[in-house]
Image (cartoon, rainbow, N blue to C red):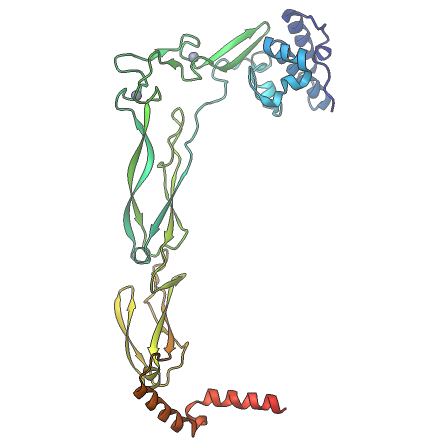
Length: 376
Ligand SMILES: [Zn+2]
Ligand SMILES: [Zn+2]
């Protein structure tokens, strides 16, 4: 939609005085104000248009920019200056200026609040699998802001005092009387704090706070899993102007373990055994998170067999029920054989192959299938 010429909007000449524009605007505002034109979109648009024209043309810098460059010189989306909020919100357009006329005088404190909650922080904490399984207490260092020791938080150079802002008298807000209207805005001198610091503290630059690191004890519950987050309320960034602090989220990352892989509350590990142990059976010592345990390997154990050790996994962080430990058997083919070992194995092979059906049933039946396949 092409924008109308601002002077045309107000219905004044290009050399109109501020007073003339004020009168013109007042007339338009009275006519198109939404309180008098409920649910009238057209009136609302006209009202916004008039308000924008008035605000630009009564600001000497903006008026000069508009006269020179047209609308491009005073794009309201760029903000700045009195109002400065753009015109996207109905409340923005009508809140402050007309509060006194139509809103039944809200008297003071109507301005935007400058109190904000601090931002949340995230801390990545790496722990071992053992720590995750048993729980742990960790001391972490997090960035924090502390009262400046030199000025005790006042921001004023030691020996000097902050003063009440002379512009707003300490209120942090000022009302600018523009004829019929009164505009309330954050005090430009003290930026809403109500105080000014004639000589800033050199340690903190007048902020009253300095960056420090603080230590925090983090209690890690037993059974915690990768990527779980622990919330520490109030340990995030401090709030602004008395707002509450944000929260700190400690995100848990579990380091890779040399022996165990975790799957939920279960643990898995590989257990290489010699082929003679696999054939003859035997007892093997295996590690668990609670120390060593023995597994009896039955004779004729095949590769990839899984032994389940109940309750040797990780206790669930909520239910505390323990998971299991799965031991995956890997039969190891012997390497770097001596002549003597080879001799024995050849002899063994001679005897075994004479009755392959009995000693290597899987290999035998597989070979038979392959033969059928080629001859069929
Ligand atoms: Zn200081
Ligand atoms: Zn002030």
